[in-house]
Length: 159
Image (cartoon, rainbow, N blue to C red; front, side, top):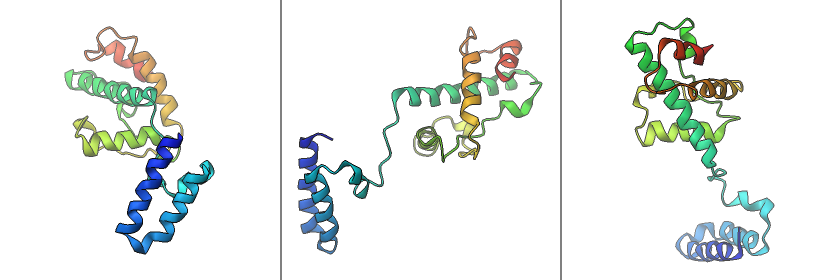
C-alpha cells in the first residue's frame, strides 16, 4: 500500500473516531499500523477484505461455468452422457479456492448470472474439483462452437 493510500485511510480513521467514539481505541490502533507501515498487521483493519481475484482467476470461473452451461445445453438437445455425474457442476472448494468460490457466490447470488446453476452446491468440499474443471475446460476450448457441442465433443470433455 503506497503512502498516499495509507494517509487517506489514516484520515478516514480520524473521522471515524469522532463519529464512533466508542471505537476510538481500535481506530487509533489502526492509525498506528498505517502510519508505521506495519504491513504484517494490515489484517487488523482490513479483515473483511480478501485478496483481489486476478483477471485469470475470474476468467477461469467464467470459462468453467460456461462449459457446464454448454454441457447442460447438449443434454437438453438430446446428448446422453456416458457419465452423467461428470456433467454436474459441484462448486469450488471454499477453503482452498476462495477467489473462485467467492466469485461463484457473487455471480449467482448478487448478479443473478448463470441462473441454471443457482441450485447447485457452492462449496464442493473437495480440493480436487478445480484441477478436474481445468482439464475439462482445456478440452472444451478445443471445440469448434463451444456452445453447440456435438455428442462427441461433450463426451471428450467429460472423459
